[in-house]
Length: 37
Image (tube, rainbow, N blue to C red; front, side, top):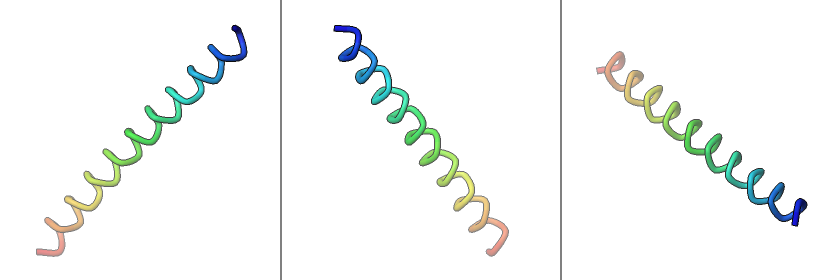
């Protein structure tokens, strides 16, 4: 049981990190578009 819970929490953390990275990437790309225009 503990191993399964650890895997679930790890996958949840990865999803959170991936979401955070995607959000940061969108902010950077949008700011780049503003500075380029």
